[in-house]
Image (cartoon, rainbow, N blue to C red; front, top):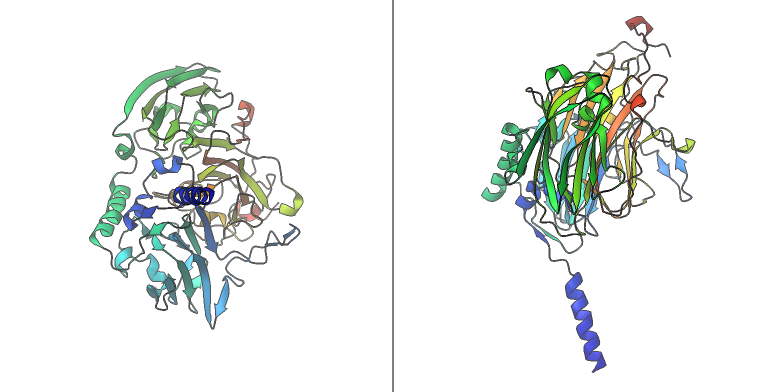
Length: 545
């Protein structure tokens, strides 16, 4: 009798733990615009990372020592996992999963082949340059998903799903520099495999996303249609901190808009007016940032449109992040300026139907410099170190670099380009980062230090001083968000020190469980504005230190 009960218990446990998730291709495509899903705590086995052409001299040995950690010949040394004859294996992994972003700075005519699920015949076999051409392959005909930016970065966001495995192989002369971002699902998940000839349903799913990116970025109706809208006109006296909204109960903020008159769109006012959001009566805010920076651009007000954030020509700044809470939300504004500030704040909110303990809280924190790492980690500059369970969903970066860049096309030889640093993202204490990039501008989706404005759904260069002043950049990781179960540590390589001067300010955006650790605190008002080291640089003086 005891044996029968033991068998029944084991069967019950097996039934409870079995993963019966099924994802159609259309489901995966919809993740490109599904802001609500970002707030769901990740399941065990859900992962994200990247294959890239980083300089493979950078290693971590068995004792945890960092070897040639500053190596910077990305794409110039062996940039592959292994060779198969003359061909190069660029990416290889087991499923179920999907490649959700391709990027390159220099795709060429050599063929790149994509094999899925162990098939000996490639599903895609064509010149690498054609992966970024909307006229060469039926599944890549969506110009808001497949494009070259105005700043020479080639991007392809059409998901390539697989059930068992994927292998990407480059033939000789395929090009130089690559990134393949991937997501994987828990073991046992069923995923509809990518087909080069799209079904009507899958074609419609891609067309829906493409049309939304083309016509509706900034409209936010997709996210606030069922929400209650509240609006307040606010005047903040000098030095005043004011609670603008206090929401009680189990709700979700689905959108935030700020309408700021042109007279108050100056760099100083936008920086010294700060936004704070507190969840569930917490002591320290989960969101804290200068107002303009929070919405993804500085200095001052700069028009641009991306999926989650933007600034519109009429003076409106918008956020489409999904922000659920269980008990309360408080939104505060602080005026650290010497004059009154006037603006209108709109908040959209609705009932939170997510299960308690299954959703995460939105976090966004602005900072300039955190405590430096050990010298063996140079040139890593900390973006975020957090503990708990959640998802990393992107960053905003403001660069101050008055000496310019070394690209002769855009600055004189001897001037200094800030963007060589790779992104390095460590998940759950891993020894070597599962995301290791090829250059800061590459992370933001462009290439070759081109100081041209561009604004796409997932990334932007929304302000530029021709590489000889400010650069304002965003990168949103929506479908390629990075889930973590225990910890997430993000760094950018920063080769030039502050006194060079090359100075960074950043915001990390992430979701974190209720008991997670957010170490970032608000910064003194005295350190918000005017911190930049000024230097007079003429073309002839560009190589002076």
